[in-house]
Length: 96
Image 1 (cartoon, rainbow, N blue to C red):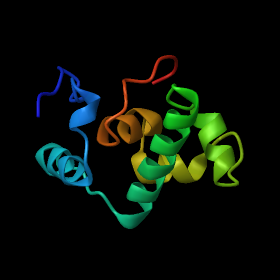
Image 2: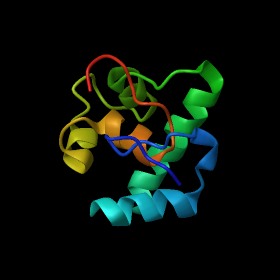
Image 3: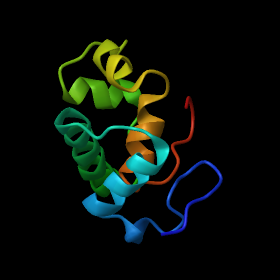
């Protein structure tokens, strides 16, 4: 599994839950059930639209307001960047 300088998979088809857990372990990041739920939802949204969802749009899927405080509580800064990274999705554009 090859990753770019930011830790994203170079070949997104290499992704699996095993790869997700291995990447997180290497990075010292914990994949909790809640984190995995967010990752799987982002993958589903990506497969439907072809783009990584904006944090505001993603937060709305979980009934959060536009500040997405819950996402920032779990992921600290840049929740969509981490969700995309461990979800084997392309690096999000825009505010990351």
